[in-house]
Length: 213
Image 1 (cartoon, helix red, strand yellow):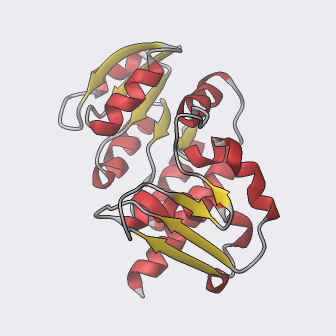
Image 2 (image 1 turned 45 degrees about the vertical axis):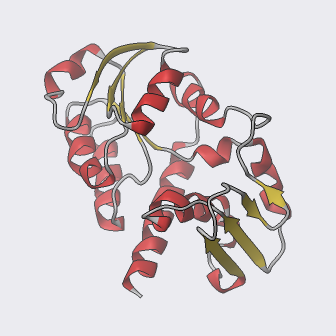
């Protein structure tokens, strides 16, 4: 499998380390580099650039008829994300948005949760909506219609503890390599693209609403 990677920052380097173990990386560049001419040599393009660049880059890659894996969020608005999913369908290419916590072994316990639900994630960030809450929204997909029963608590400290009620998602040396599992599934398996689209748009829609309240 031949892939390209646009994004060479903190998360891009992490993605590159995983990709190198399972496929050939034809090129790595930044969002400011010329990449269109390089797309002919690959099967998939991975995008790990700043959130506000995703829309234009993903759109260009889809129009070159390339399968796209994009770091979350696909875009920062429901409207733009919906447009890109429609475009992928038009050009008959695959589009997958990072939902790495769905590949954590602890995810299977989500179905056993009962309300009220409390999310605690002690991580300091400048963007709690797209760095943190995005993941919790798709994890709690069965419960999202009643957000009044969910309490979110972010950034109280920076010890990286991440829990949803009694389910501990804190990343430790004993955690499975969910990122590698997700990439393997996308490249070599058969992920549920419709479900990935559903939860990606759901996250956009809820965060749009919360930001506008």
